[in-house]
Amino acid sequence: MSLLIIGGTGTLGRQIAKRALDEGYQVKCLVRNLRRGNFLRDWGAELVYGDLTLPATIPPSLKGVRVVIDASTVRPTDDYNAQKCDWRGKLALLEASKLAGIKSFVFFSFLNAEQNTDVPLLDLKVKFIEKLKQSNINSKVFECSGFFQGLIEQYAIPILDSQTVWLVEKIVPTAYIDTQDAAKVVLNSLAVVERDKTTKTVPLLGPTSWTPEQIIQLCERLSGKKSKISYIPLFVLSSLRTILRSLQFTWNIADRLQFSELLRQNGSILNSTSIFTKDELSTLEQYLQEYFSKILKKLKETNYQQSQKKDISFL
Ligand SMILES: NC(=O)c1ccc[n+]([C@@H]2O[C@H](COP(=O)([O-])OP(=O)(O)OC[C@H]3O[C@@H](n4cnc5c(N)ncnc54)[C@H](OP(=O)(O)O)[C@@H]3O)[C@@H](O)[C@H]2O)c1
Image (tube, rainbow, N blue to C red):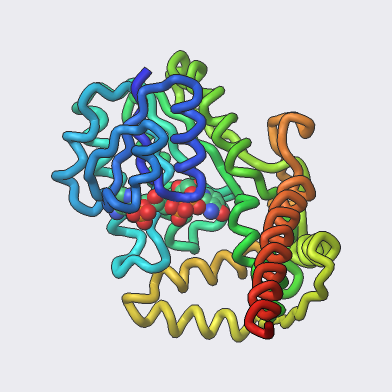
């Protein structure tokens, strides 16, 4: 079966591409920067240049494709807002998919997005899912709440670097998932998506929910380092978001800040459960343990090499 993956250079998309190649699928990746996608080519994927914000670049990528897996989204660093990529770009992709006779379409949204449409990106996701339902293409929407991989930059690195970890008070626990597990689930679902004529929405969550404080405690235990935590008052966050939204080039950052407020307020995330059995998924303890043991081993080796160099220069 031939797949087109959009967002193959991203956190989730790359794991979907890797798993699909390992399982023997023919994989094409639409990338807007061919050099950035080189690792996907090395893994065995075909790269096609394309950019969702340039609709004319989309149709050629769909040639010979049966299933579209769209794991793309605007980057906080992009100089346009989510409307351009996550709405107009996605609509262009859907129209081109209909014309190309695509059989199935896989899409990713946020858990409880429909209850939080005041966040612009979530509003666009909800509207796009409506369009997907009307499209007559078999489709599946996975609702995620966060990935293990995102926690490295947010918690593990600042703790290792003795930097301050900034938190918002009273964030509800979140069921982060390893993107490798998420990729496994997505690919396992393809046969069902092919048969199912309706658009199905399913949560894509990890085995346990975690608060930021619990994640920090875990990082401290595994790294042997003490963290420095500072809390950002909610009113500061809201004011910062308002200022950032007034400047067009920081709209995407403003959207991300609004997620933090949403996580704080939205208690329903706590009550959502995954449809996958816990023992099928890796745990955050396992994931972080592996990360810290690799990184601490590397640090030890580097320190050893540096001390050797010092000894030699002293002699
Ligand atoms: N991360 C989370 O915690 C989270 C939570 C819930 C839902 N989701 C959803 O899950 C999906 C995957 O998220 P992620 O965190 O893996 O995303 P990510 O790491 O931010 O990657 C975004 C991907 O989209 C690509 N992209 C951005 N603009 C594009 C454009 N104009 N044309 C073509 N490709 C474009 C990027 O390409 P470049 O490499 O060229 O920038 C990159 O491959 C998204 O739909 C996201 O909304 C994520």
